[in-house]
Amino acid sequence: MKNILFKSSAYGALLLAIATVTGCTKLEDTSYTNIVSSTYTPTTKDLGSLVSPAYASWRAVVMSNATGWFITQEICGDALAVPAKPYGFVDGGLHRRMHEHKWTAEQAHVQDLWTKTYEGVTNCNRVLFQIESGSIPVDAANKAAVLAELRVLRASYYWVLCDNFANVPIVDRFDVPNGFLPEQSTRVQVYDFIIKEITESLPALGSENDVTTYARFNSKWAANALLAKVYLNAQVYTGTAQWAKCIEACDAVINSGKFILEPIQKDVFKAQNQNSKEIVWAVPHDEIYAGGFFMAAWTMSPQNQFTFNAKSGGYGGLNAIPQFIDTYDPADKRLTDGWMMGQQYSASGTPLLCAYGTLVGKPLIYVNECPGIDSTQEIHSFRINKWEIAQNSAPTSMNNDFPVLRYADILMMKAESLLRTGSADAAATLVSQVRNRSFVSAPAKATVTGGQLALPTVYRYGLKNHFTTTQDAVADIQYGRFLDELGWEFAAEGHRRQDLIRFGVFTTKSWLSHSPNGGNKNIFPIPLQELNKNTKLKQNPGY
Image (tube, rainbow, N blue to C red; front, side):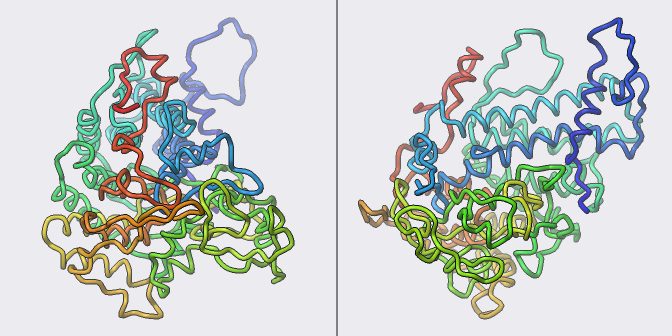
């Protein structure tokens, strides 16, 4: 049974009832289902319920149908794509534009990511205002900690905005006047705000790591993990690297002794993964109470419904890019555990057959080939298998919690910071630690050296589709082999866009049907809808 902070809509109803202290009058009915602030005094055990609506937006941000944070970070990169299928996914070029970096200010991914993330900001501001104004009475012993938690949570939303849009308004209050239009801030100002919010909040946060801190920012460890992630990308955000500060934040988590690498990486992604000691901060999901996690539906063929006795078929749109799969060492368990490949079978062992396109009736064998973003058949490209797909479950509403920050990430962020500051051998020790569990059949391959991390990437960049095959130079990618390590460890976790940008690959190299399409693509445009609403906003360069 999951203990999920924001799994129930009842929490949102509770806070909404508390918030609604004004409105219609002269009502004679007595409500027995809503709680109003005048009759409700929360205790310590209620605090999680009170802050839960501010967290709920993260679930919408991560998995907002086909246009959430996860999909947006992945399908514009070199590891995953949504090609046209014989059963759909043309969608007016929606997914193809992301692959080719031809999105505009009207792209659904751009609009939805902005809207859902700012909903999170607004929810944080509302609860902060209610606590600070006394609408939600919180005792003095807990008030500072709750306010600190909400500030870090709000900073996590601003990290998404800073990373994806750069120049966004900072709104840190709920009681704004009618017609209020926020001023646009620079990316540096947004970065500074995030750092300030986290660092000022850290002293008030607790040191526990248990069910009371799971999926919350009420511990120093989750806050430091987020801080490390922001510092890791500081050079991209501000032009000034902060590798030493990234190491310091990582060390705070490492030295706490409260997290480990799971002996089996795949265990981090179980359907019931809430007890994993590797997860530092996650977005909870539950098939019944907190739906919306649809990784299985998005990647598996409709025929794979019979593999898992699923309650419905998959969409089969999200596939691996073959050039990325080719980078794996065959002995790496992250390849065999992380991807569906080869002949597909029903739960009873019967070979599955293709049901769509030109291969109807032929064996459904996933091959590491992809003709291009414009046209594929049911067999083309490996599918994501990293996240456990439970038998008899709903592929559109899985139980797996989404670990946004996990201990392997902490170790790899520290390793990258060490590598970039001249401590290559120390970095290699950490990378080897992460690799160790994935090479059980060839343990000698788990160990890497500092010199190896400085080698070029093994990714064969260049166009590779049924129209064109080219080859890009890779010698200009500094620490390309380390970028490979990030790809293998964090495949299908929403990391790829950010990592490619940090290593200078995102707008300079080609893959599958994607060619470089402008350096301005490192950030997304401000959505047209937002520009129309707020005349103080200026469009990002190049859009």
